[in-house]
Length: 610
Ligand code: ADP
Ligand code: MG
Image 1 (cartoon, rainbow, N blue to C red):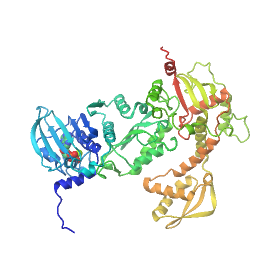
Image 2 (cartoon, protein in one colour):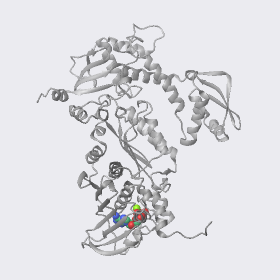
Image 3 (tube, rainbow, N blue to C red):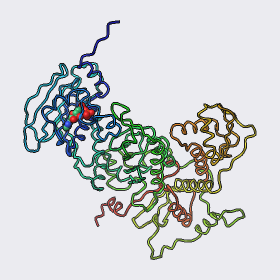
Image 4 (cartoon, rainbow, N blue to C red):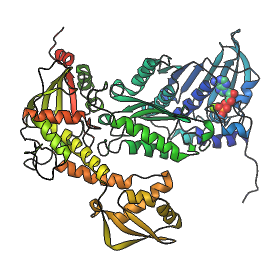
């Protein structure tokens, strides 16, 4: 083995560059973050050849004095933190002091900057990866900084080979700009590629301006089908937009989560969001959201990863709980008649745009999943049956239903019609057509009835409790000591869900009793999964989720089928039930249950100017 020697600064920087500079997009991220840290209110980004030839970013931030420019290019040189305490409550996006040094070691980099409002004279520092020697000269520049990065990886051919096509690199770069644009509504952004202006986002922090930016960045269809949420606890705030379940995506590509203004990817957050959508999302689909979590910086560690995309929460469980319960509530509260329309295919414009671009699934929740959208086997079960009359053993709820089913709607009354209006007719045995104040309502009767039945079954379970039965032969499960302790600590949780789990030894549990509904399930695996969740997230909804799945299947089988004729009173009863039901906008599988076609939209369809 050769003797130990110190690496040259250039080589050390190039090695460090491997961590932060993967591709043009990572350069843009670092340079833009510096502009934001410098208090810029406007940044202009110019890119050539997907960023590998040129990235030029100009800001109107604080700028740097001539003497500081060589320092900015040096490794471990930063103006953002000075002590360990600073690190523990870091408020800036950068703090490691190595981005510019890294970028400079693998490109031709120049910094032109001016810290003064009063003069237009600044300075320029340039370095070329090869030697890392900084040349300093005067240069005109208004207050602020321009960073120019040319010929990325010109001196590291191995890395250059890993670059993809110009188009791919640019789309990564654009994604970085989008994320930062969503993180700072108070900053204006512009982006040009190969001389073409692509984005020009004005600054503004009013609600309308924010919504406009989200619509520009995420697409207008998202904004049209998103709920605004805002919840606050003494030390936590969550706000932003969550896509209605019917606006789900085939990929997790429209998910933005910011913690104190920094975009992050985090298991705790991802799990909490997924759990909140559990009951309303079509299997295999991904929710869309733009969410902002704000908390005391001391409660989150951002120094976990060089790109700072990952964070660690001091109290992950509290954060999980907060996110889950905020979103869960918001999604459950969507009712017919709310300002936001739950199902897709709403505007005539939307339809036109869709067909023109062929992007139907982006706009219309109804377009995907065609095979599944058709109601289950024909000729199957009974329908949405009006109870034949009060019978012994019927619940009060059923009796009330009976009354409602047989009461004709008061069409003539002066009062505004209910949100989903009154039934007009049934189409092809599948859809209910109804008239409400806005125009025409279309309901998928199987999907709607399925959700109603499901929510009713869940309510019944909540009020009557979960029926549970002792096992003839208790099941022994070998676990770790930690898991055994957790099972003992959470005995009440298990019991509440109809499961009795005893500690039989330091590393052994006994399942004594299980919910009747889980008779045919693998309860041992379920128990293990629950314990794993408890360890990682401090909570688990697996048993409920499993029980829900069973109820959901029951609801599906017990719901009205296609090709069953409903009478007008039956249809109206279904509409009224939908209005009173949580999550009525989607069936148990996340398909939309109804949609609205307004009079304006109908008029547009027929080119009828009013
Ligand atoms: P870090 O951002 O972690 O401090 P960088 O290498 O990205 O490290 O930047 C080094 C220093 O250069 C920053 O701390 C900051 O003082 C200065 N700097 C970089 N970009 C700008 C800019 N656009 N405006 C003002 N100062 C900047
Ligand atoms: Mg930086």
